[in-house]
Length: 487
View 1 (cartoon, rainbow, N blue to C red):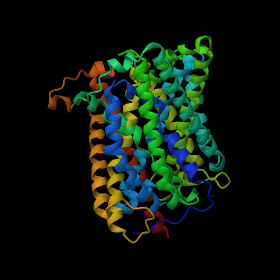
View 2: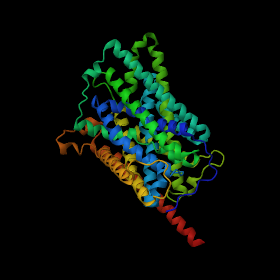
View 3: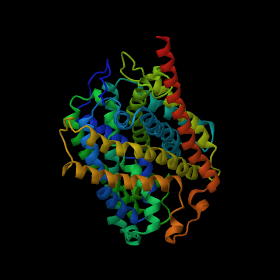
View 4: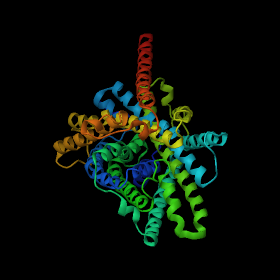
């Protein structure tokens, strides 16, 4: 095993605060807060459980690996070192494509719903709706195209706006509760159940993964070996607070059954902002704008990192053409891969617009499930790759180490992998485990579409991605062999 050389022409611009802000901008998802809160009081219970039983070991193993292997490309490099280029290519494909799928699916849908309901009416399926979604997608791509030295301030401001908005909402909900009583919390059922666990585990895992994403820009960090572990630890604590407190606030204010995945946060804001009297409407409008901007910077934060990772895969011979892996000489960004992400997001947005006849809420939940599935599946190879690197490359300097050495690392990895395996299955095949433990499950009532339609869209997406990823690797492999014969 040999570590890859640094990518030429890249400038170091990410310090510890920048890495932490990028993690916060990427990981804290406005689009899943309502989805989590729709699980009721037990959502708070399961957030707490997963924060301890999943996030802690996850942060430990990724902090050690991210500091020990800070090369540009992050997870792609780790899997290639552990399992070879084909496995790395497929892993990178799923990790990367999650984000244009998510950007063109759930993220743009919840942004359009928020703008339509709280800023300016768009209508559903209208020309204005399409235009808004196209502008949203390509604005996120544009922020990934500009140089990281400038683009990092966009994601940093988005992280700050997100944390401030959540803090303002939570404080307002407390004020509302003081005036009207905390009836929602009194009615909420915090006792965990098997049905609630299976419904929430995929979305909670999706909400808590991604703190390693800035490692995809490892060659652009000033001191990754010192900064990555601290950034992962601090951003993990911030993320836990930014999920737990707003979900409690939503539950305290919103009546049972009113919370939906697509409208949860802003619907609850519309309720608790009554405490501001005549200022309610302008504050709601400002919150709606801030909400959309935060979603936009969230999408751009992911595009910044995953496009770099997939560009490294392309330049290494793992994805169609090496030209997709070229970094712009002046901007230092993979412009061609950025454009490909924008096109992919646009295609998926159009497909999602025609998916569900049940309306935006059903569509949002199905396309969010696709994004959850593809991202979690990528961790099925990333997580064991970390343990392989720990065992095979003990000589690599590790400025931070998981407690209890290799044994502690192995236990933490096993815990993380068990969670990811469970979440992947439940996301890809919902409703299949419930009957095994005597829990009823109405698929159409839960998803708004038939199981056949759901699986065609989700499982079909996975199979297409496997085919595309394999084809991209084989085309590069055959091209390289042809050049070798020509020499």
